[in-house]
Picture 1 (spheres, rainbow, N blue to C red):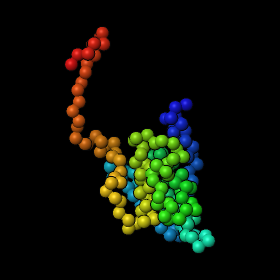
Picture 2 (tube, rainbow, N blue to C red):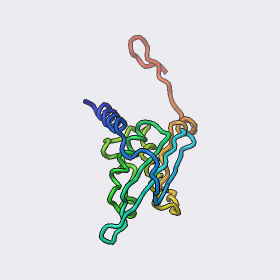
Picture 3 (cartoon, rainbow, N blue to C red):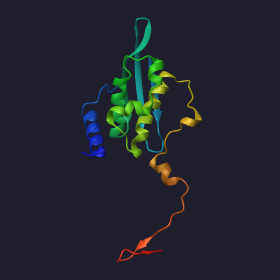
Picture 4 (cartoon, rainbow, N blue to C red):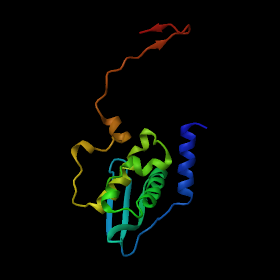
Length: 163
């Protein structure tokens, strides 16, 4: 089984039984992010509780208008952050939140970044993203970026190079 097949099976398993899907009534924090280029949107609700004098995440839920990978990452993320403090949860990157799925294909990295953005929006709404932490470009942005010079090589019937 190759990495791509393994990733697809993990995503499929996660979306067949998504965890913590839906609005969380009485949430202490709500974060919403969207990507206007691809149309994905994700909202995350977080509820806290006190344990031994520490404020930890009791439960997190989500709703998304996104692809299967966004659903899978959000589902896993709500499980991963449970029991963590705000500070601990904020140290988690999109890669950390998607780690149980394995390496994300390049075109799906923005899904994990969407989940990370919603989590940050809920837990630290006043925090501004550092300029150095820009999101990976979407496929549309890649197509719209200035074209690189390319050279076309035509192979003849005898596989000889002709320019």
